Structure formats: structure tokens, C-alpha cells
Length: 203
Image 1 (cartoon, one colour):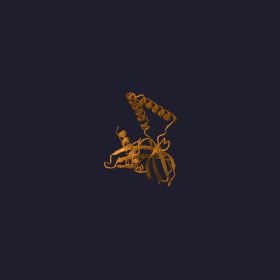
Image 2 (image 1 turned 90 degrees about the horizontal axis):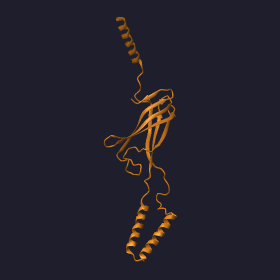
Image 3 (image 1 turned 180 degrees about the vertical axis):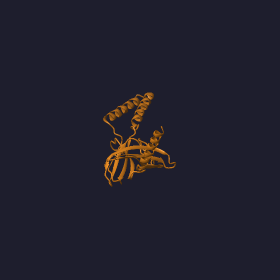
Image 4 (image 1 turned 45 degrees about the vertical axis):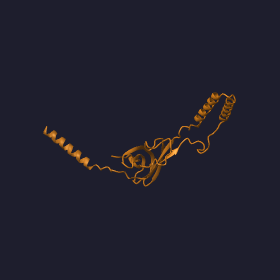
């Protein structure tokens, strides 16, 4: 029994000695975020946004029919009928004047990354994080994976287009020149994989 306890104690001591000799992992990879940005781009853009309303042949025909109806009603001397026709025409004009469905926007996120290590990067995960500039509270996070070989000392810029805005305060339906106000941002590396099979993970 005493010999068994001695063997267990010796094994534990050897195990702790091996663990103590293991190299400590670096808290940050040898990777630099050179630049990052995001833009808002309109999709399904058709025609000239400043052009007047398009009037089809059917619109012209309908307008002529309405004009004749109104002329006949007024010529008959029936004031009630004339008023009814006028109301119907105005109702049709209101329906035609309604704006089309709001245009949608897509969002383009870019990151420039430099490999400062002596190993080739094959893949990396990164988060584009958005904060309330006044409070520092996180209000949005977009997660991306870049599958790209980046050799030692090399840099690359990656572009991702998605439908998700940076935060809920950014509209996907309209363009607001003040929507970036009060918004701060940062890029956070989450994982870096290298060609030799090693992987760095954010603690």
C-alpha cells in the first residue's frame, strides 16, 4: 500500500514537471489589422431616381376615360354624379401617387490584415464590433471568416457583403447622412489558423 502511494505521488510530480516545461501560449497573434471600414450600398437600383413618374399607355387611356366621364357627368347637370366621379378620380390618383416599396440597402464590410509572423495564415475569424460612442455599450456585432492564404510579411484586404446593418439604428430601407453619428467601431480577431496546423484562439 505504501509503495502504491509512493508511485502515485511520483507520477503526479513528474506530470506537473512536464506541464511546467510546456511553452506558454502568446496572448496575441502576430497579426496586424491595418484598416477596416463599412459602407452602405443600394441594391436593385433601377432607372433614374430623379426622373419623373413613368406614365404607361394604360395610364394615358385611363386618364382620357376619366376625363370623358367627368365631362359627361357635368354636362348632364347632375351635380351628385359629377361629385362622385371627381371623388373616384381623386382616389385613383392618390393610389398612383403612393411611393413604391422602399429600396433596400446592403452593407459592405472590409478589413485589411497583415501577417507579421513567420508562418502562412490560411484562415481567420474576426468580428466587426459597434459601440454607442457615449456609453461604450456594444450595440452590434458582425462575425466573419476569411479563408485566405497570407504569407509571412504579406497583407491582404478582404471584402464581405451582407444584408445585416452594423446596428439596429442603421436602416436597411433609407439613407440617413447622420446615421453614423454616435457610433464607434473596432475589429476583434477571434481565431487565426496557420498552414502548419497550429491555431490561435482568443482567450
